Image 1: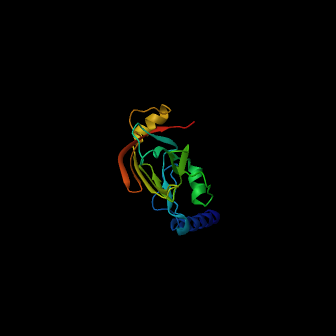
Image 2: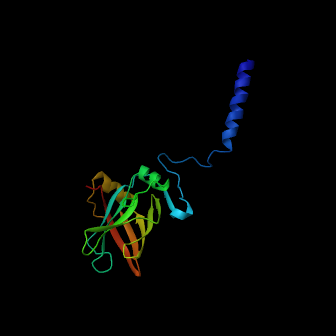
Image 3: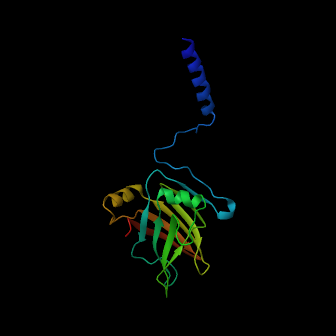
Length: 182
């Protein structure tokens, strides 16, 4: 009997220690904790319970000044976000990036100087090779994204509707459809 009382007291004491460190609300299954990089590296945060990875292609309308046009937004998988936010970065690849068709060249990737990704919204800022500041702000349509993923792309409805600012030009109502990639 003394052993049971002693074990119960020890268990309650140890459990009490965790009460002060426990989160106030349990995390959703598969949810990720937002992480912010040191100020010198910009602000990077993601928290999503759904897999948003893939390519989001621009529809028929050209988005960009002159012949410089947005082809797609890329969103990586969970580990790619973690690696980037821990400082494991590539000069040519990021968990969120924009790819443009550039006159005289094939493509240009714009990597993030900051990003914020959640189940409902993707925001990213970066700078093009010609120095234009680029801001991407997209609202996700979870239902359309789920349908496109089930059907492996090809949805009539956009998975993201965005506003994109390139330098001094702003493009609103930009529609991007999801596809899984090559």
